Image (cartoon, rainbow, N blue to C red):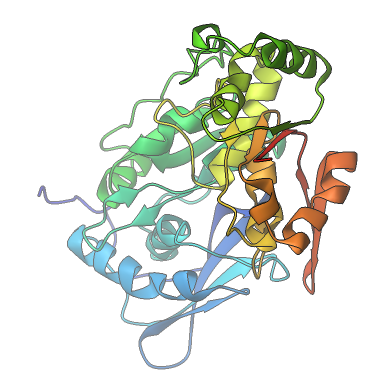
Length: 363
C-alpha cells in the first residue's frame, strides 16, 4: 500500500467542525442528510446522534478500522457525529464513508469547502473498501434535485447512479482512493451518463409458444389490452400458471419513465437485476403463506411489499383459496386506488401499486 503525503504544515492535528452531505431514503424518496463531525470533552471514542439505527451505530468501529488500515490519521479525541435532520430515522450502513470523510475533514486533511456540492454514499469494510448500498437511484435523483453537482458511490453502484442525468458520478473503490482524489494527488474518472432505454428483452415465457386454449388466450389478450384483472378456474395441468407467466410478454412495452419508476422501487428493495434497470414488466408470484405485511409493505419503518414490486406489471396469486382472508382483504383498497398508504407512529408512507391481478384456483 503506498504511503500518503499529508498536506504540509500539519505538525499537529487541528480539529474543527466538518460537514459532509449524504442521503437517506424514506419510502421511495431521498432526504439529504448533513453529517456533522466535531470533537467534545471526554475519553477517546465516537458518539453518533440523530436517530441512528443499530447498523449506523456500528459504523463507529468500521470507520476507525478503515481509516487506520488506509494509513490515514484517526484522532485520539472524543468525536461526536450528528446526522441532521434529527427527525429523520437513519438506517443502514451507507453512512460509513461520509462519516470517515468527515473525520478526515475535521482534522484539516481535506481542503475546506471541497465537498459543498458533493453527496457521499457507501458502506465500508474494515480494510476501507466500499461496498454496495441499496436505494442509490432515488438518492442520485434527490442529489440532482437539490443542486448537487457530484455524487460518490461504490464502483458496483455506479451504473445505477449514472441513470440520472446532469450529475457527475464518481466510482469509489476504497476510502484511500477518495481521499487521494479530494487532495488532488490521484483523480477518479467520472462515469459517463447511461441513457435509460426501455427496450426490453424476451420474457421467460413466450405467449406464442402456448398451444391450445384459444378461448383463454383470447380472454388474456383482452385483459392485457384493457388492464383488467383475471381469475382462471380449471383442473391441474390445464395451463393456467403458464398463461399467467406469459402475460408480461403481451403487455405494452414500458416507456423510459415507467422503467425508471419501477427501477426506483427495486432499488429501494435492493432487488435490481444485474443490468441495473428493470426493462420488462414485473411478474410477482408470492406463496399463499405470505403475510399481509409482506404483501402490501410494512415493517417498523415500511418498505415496499409485493404489490409495489408488481407495479406496472402482474401480481399472480396461485391457489387463491389458500390465501388468508386478511391477506386478500388488504388488497381491496390498493386495487382501486393504485397506491397503498402505510401508517406508523412515525408517519405515513405511500407506495405505488398499479398492477394487474391474475388469480388461479382449481374447480
